Length: 163
Image (cartoon, rainbow, N blue to C red; front, side, top):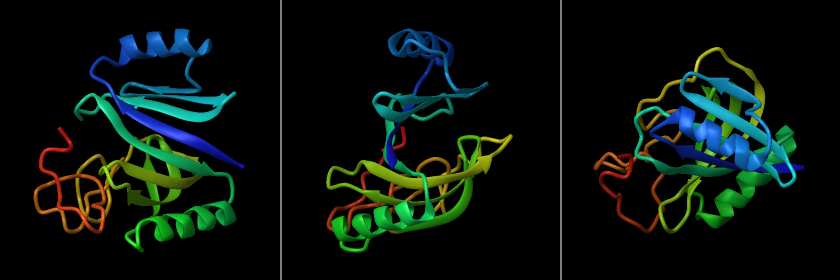
């Protein structure tokens, strides 16, 4: 089974934690000084927010697989959807979790993360933009303008997308 993932960048973490706690009817399942996450079961959503200097709004979408086989299935689907333009990040630390992941970008330039969680971490991870991968959204190798999402195969990089 898979779980839909949404990660929002916010400018006021405390206000957003209070809002989403009321909206979802439960407190975050994980909370740090710069991050909070709700693992909702109905609907199955991994909803995360962070205050790490990114422009407020959607940071990325994703799908969380429960198994390596599920992650491999998502990778095959991402490759088919993007003509093979999948950024394989491998094992990494991001959002206070150890995970295995890859990224793909939709035609609008929205980043999609597919991952399976391997364990927890006491650190958020590397939040810098780099072609090798960053937490949470890696830069496209061809994105000379500094966009921090893998670029669609047919589109030009967008400047300033990371705020």
